[in-house]
Amino acid sequence: MSIDETERASAAAAASRRSDRYDQTFPVLTPAEIARIRRFGEIRHYADHELLFETGKPGPGMFVVLAGNVAVTQRDGLGRVTPVAEQGPGQFLGEISQLSGRVSLVDGCAEGDVECLLVPPERLRALMVAEADLGERIMRALILRRVNLLQGGVGGPVLIGSPNSSDVVRLMGFLTRNGLPHHLLDPAVDRDAGDLVARYSPSPGDLPLVVTPDGTVLRNPREAELARAVGMIGQIEPGKVYDVAIVGAGPAGLATAVCAASEGLSVAVCDQRAFGGQAGASARIENYLGFPTGISGHALTARAFNQAQKFGADVMIPIEVKALDCGRGDGTFALDIDDGAALRARSIVVASGARYRRPEIANLATFDGRGVYYWASPIEARLCKEQEVILVGGGNSAGQAAVYLSTHAARVHMVIRGGGLAASMSRYLIERIESTPNIELVFNTEVVEVNGAPDTGLERVTLRSRLSGETWPMEVRNLFLFVGADPATGWLDGCGVNLDRGGFVVTGVPIEGATNQRSTPSLETSVPGVFAVGDVRSGSVKRVGGAIGEGAQVVAALHGYLADSLN
Image (cartoon, rainbow, N blue to C red; front, side):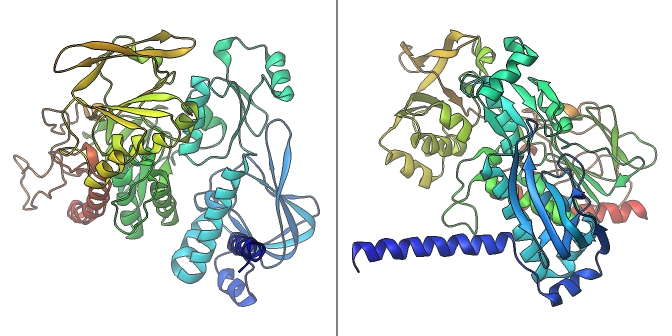
């Protein structure tokens, strides 16, 4: 085959893949398939230019177009409108947020008279389960549409500020990890962004500005403020009591949610930042069953997040749980959350995980987000492109981050307190690191000092040999820390849940004074009805596969507890 023929064949193959992807994203349903959907929906009519759904407002569900055409567009708070698709008879409208009734990320406007079949969120979830083959096609399309919105770089909130600003990095990381479309405008190069900054005359502390789709302008918001402004957080239904409330949306919490919800339990999941936990920030997981080529932590946990919503779990992010009330007289528990409300449930699963430890180094907190990072995502990788960086840690998370950063940074200095990696890291990662020429292993060494300016960020790190005591400085602007983890259990204070010496939750110990004959399951805590799974549990293996396994395992114990509590 000639070069020209090879290039034509390659182009044809690429075009075929794009066509297949489009057909999966915007499939056309047959009359027989629409007939199967009818029992889950109701007929609606819309006049010319009438909105079926609107950006920033809760979506009513999935629409199947029976007659007419609907134009789907994205718009941002600056008034910019971008066409997404035009859909006609046999096609359906919606993306993954329609599973849970969250706010719409796009506008859908009738072009002429339109007749649709509207399937509300709860009936859409029933359709997914009852019509498995059809539900699979619909689910794939809903997910691919969200992916397209993320990759399009338009729509959603607009962030206005310097790409290197620590607060821009913070907010972009929050939106990215929660799978929300957004885009960034630099006022130094974008005229519209510069005009908006001049109009609002913010002080440096007010940047970045965030413009939501309805035009509201926020000044350097906290994550919870931004989440409320874009409709991420809904209201807790007054008086509702869930079968189980899960605190933490990492692999263990999401596995519990998927298994419990799929078995008919009513489930609420709370997390104060994003789904995925520490695993969600892993660049690549290669030793998880079923993914021989590896998968990013975000991709793996995003699938679980969508799966939990498919089965009807209420996932509430970002919501911080302040305390657990175990003393209610009606046999239920209450989670006190950050807005003063209470979430009630008949059982609790503690899956709040652990947070990377912050070493006791003077001024370290000054540079959080300004050169000091505790995870390595594409956002941080962009900041250290073609620079030398220091990464501290010798575990699997540190190894994954080092390999990932080595594809962006000029050199990764991997600093390890001990004399080797074999005791704390999987063999495949050790081999990968040893074969990567721009990763330098620095053993028996620790970071003792960081310096720089609060407004410009980290500039220098001082290292010390643990063998000789010798110190030496390194001029670097990015320091990544993966040095062990502390359990997130402060919210359990005062409720009687036993913790070990390190603060991790103790499970499987017989409950003193128990009068019933029910044996204590291995994942139950010292408080009956409160269970713990994943990294937060004392004695857990601290691996993604182990966390997911415990999340599935605990559901049998939940059924047993709930059955006994009703007798």
